[in-house]
Length: 138
Ligand code: T46
Image (cartoon, rainbow, N blue to C red; front, side):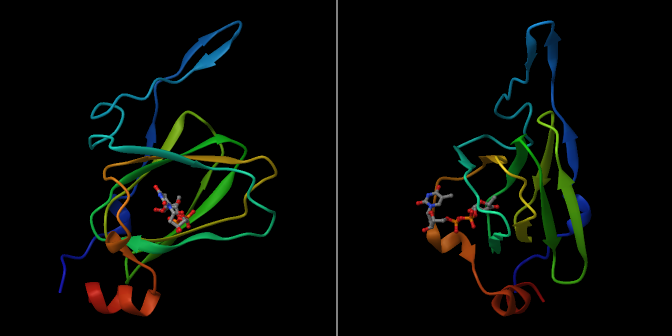
């Protein structure tokens, strides 16, 4: 049995925002903006209306999810508790610890989900079945 994570440790972090008349900039610094060192960056875009992404947990990877454009909801489940967080501002990031089941849904048209990740891509880090996830952590 693995050490169980809690959705209550998955929190919104306010990101730096430098404003001027010509627009805003949010710098993301590994280990400073994020509570982990960033090994990988990727983004979800062109998500068709009604699509659900995620639908898995990561055994080791931690992440910061940012709605760089538009909005979407993130459902988080630790095997006991469940909550949904809405992301709709590019200066807020949702920190997700390892060991959390997540589903991304209700993408607005043109939404971009920017992901800062603590690990390189590794398919063996995924748990893609909710039943398996619950067995792994309970
Ligand atoms: C999460 C949400 C926000 C790669 O080859 N390299 C990569 O770095 C990634 C992220 C994916 N892939 C491949 C693996 C799959 O064949 O792309 C395909 C779709 O990946 P995945 O199932 O991870 O896609 P999502 O959008 O369901 O989930 C991803 C993250 O993995 C996940 O942790 O929270 O974005």
